Length: 213
Figure 1 (cartoon, rainbow, N blue to C red):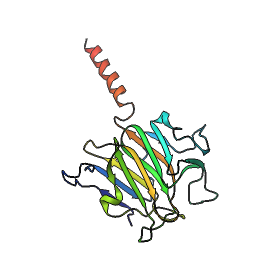
Figure 2: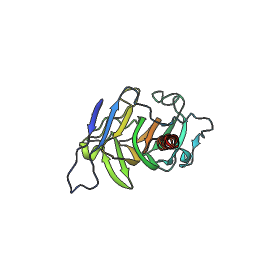
Figure 3: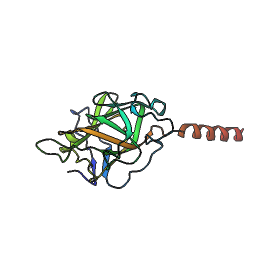
Figure 4: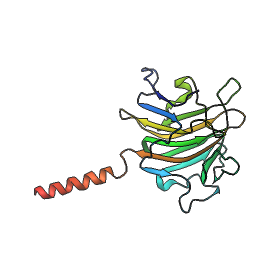
């Protein structure tokens, strides 16, 4: 079981072109940091029921998809009281997120009743891709997938960070076992550059140039 543990992926050598150093994930019980762009599915005007996969394209999340292509947003706390009150996103056979720009950080709350990883199934995997290439895979690179939070137990928060200029633009969250149903909520992320950084720096620099003149 991977819990309250930070996993740092080491470089796998020149022959492993699809895997890079510089990706870190922490699974934890405490809330992960909140980054610049947030999505909690309770924003005014958020549709419920089966939703279009491009519902959040205006945030740069060009596709938020379920494994069965039936993404659902609803308040599941009545049926699954261990999921947060308020709306959450439900993906049967996994949750797949694609962004229109590179990300450097992400935090996300995840529940999945797949159960403990075992010979008979269960467990949760998190995979990162960039430009279509896998760059981080918990199961393949760490040798063990995570035990998901479910039934009110376990560590539900994942915090993904990068170093050394590494980025990602796709996140895949996959549950295994007899009930591979995944719920996610409270997503936040930083793009590269951090939203607004260039504009602020550019305006400040322009003002300095004008003052010197």
